[in-house]
Image (cartoon, rainbow, N blue to C red; front, side, top):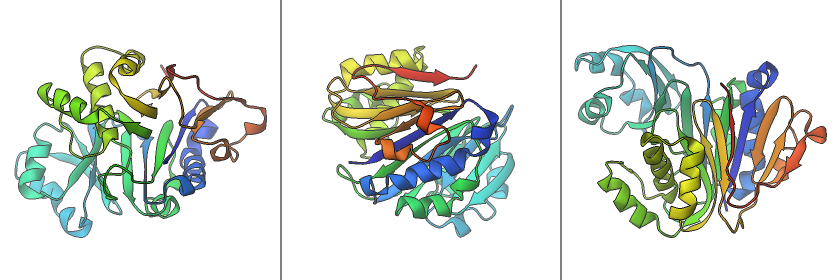
Amino acid sequence: MCGIVGLFAKSPAVEAEMGAHLSAMLITMSDRGPDSAGFAIYRDPAPGAVKVTLQSPDPETDFADLASDLASLGIETLGLEQVETHAILRLASDKGLREALAEIRPDIRVMSRGNAIEIYKEVGLPEQVAERFALASMSGTHAVGHTRMATESAVTTLGAHPFSTAPDQCLVHNGSMSNHNNMRRELAHAGMAVETENDTEVAAAYLSWRMAGGENLGQALQHGLKDYDGFYTFLVGTGTGFGVLRDPIACKPAVMAETDDYVAFGSEYRALVSLPGIETAKVWEPEPATVYFWERS
């Protein structure tokens, strides 16, 4: 089942209301995924720095004194902002961060890292998740979201989407891959770490691996058509835009809309009806085995 939504702003007005638009879209997809929800939003880039999203099951304990404890291990922070069970950590460099966290805060998990990306996800209804992280108040250049109905793994925070396996990259997914265990082993040999049992994280790691080898997102998605075995719709975020790909059969629902102000994606059209100007937008169903990508220079 599951629901996917995404929004790419072409105008400052849509950027200013990015979180409000995505929140409404995400909540509309609640009956496609009531178990957990999450979103990645690209905002507040940190020039010359790295922004890391952290998550903890015990945030009051784990985030207290974290900056000073990291400093004692030689990792200087530029700022730490707690957002409910998550925190945004800014660093000059994240080299050695995972090893340091494993030593001093083993329960903390890294949700994302990069220049602009922030990922928030938790168990619960999409409306509850959106409210916990004040999504409606956020601005941003683009964002993707996911409502999950767990079928292949447990209902946990780490099993929720999006998944991020490289700087400023993320993936949300509706469908199932039958060969993800083989891909997981092949990626491990290539040095790509996959932390959960979720097949979506495997797909994210595959794309990150191909892009690390020099391919752009479109080329990586195109290669995936040969290597993935299953039925799926992918919505992939990068630091400059997002891409969409459906498998060659395209049995999972998907619809897109474009105006002069935005590009939007939803698992169903009803996820888009609250967007401004939707009544005059170009609306279409993405073609099977076709890569769509929007990017800002």
